[in-house]
Amino acid sequence: MKRFLTLFVAAAVLMGLTACEKENDDKTYGELKIADETYVLNGATCSYLPSSSDGSMCYFITLSTNVYWDGEGNFSDDPRLMANCTMVTLYTLCAHTTAIDKIAEGKYVYGDKWGNITHTGASYYLQFDENGAQKEYMDFGQSIVESSQLEVEIKHISGKTYEIKFDGGVDIMGNPVSGYYKGEVEMFESAQP
Image (cartoon, rainbow, N blue to C red; front, side, top):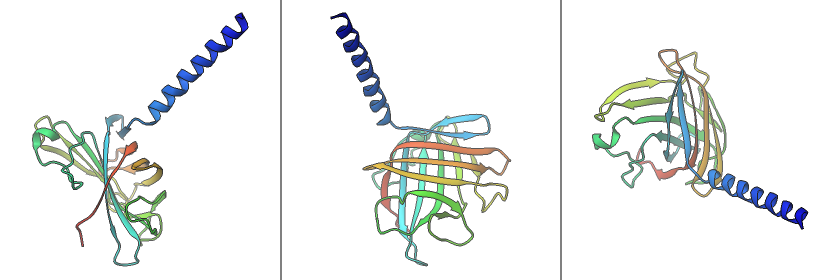
């Protein structure tokens, strides 16, 4: 009986740990690292449009500290909602795919010509002060900062949930830039031509 009780307790603990692990897997988590500073990212949008040059899909991913969408994938322009907000935009990511409203998986590497699983190296981050006014804008992609080695990796988990990693970026002040996001991404078709 004592042996059975020990096994039962061990199984219950294991089930509890597994349940907690599964629960944590479903939670949104993200961070942006700039040199020694870390900023929380807890929401994401992705606008997409077909490329007129080769028929591939172009993605523009924006991750943010605060989530205030207007229903069409745009951030609110109310400065009160942007107080102490940090945003990072990764663009233009280019992939050959038939999926219209799903980000193509893979590691996007910089290329001076668009191709499959490439990016233009035109990425930046924005920071807003306590009043919601923009206080900093920094490019960290290869198109502006030659020393940057930015790579973006996308993994589709399920439904709207993605894992997004980016590393190797260097901003125009020489600070290393990297980040991670796992959570839902609101997809919308870009109105750009």
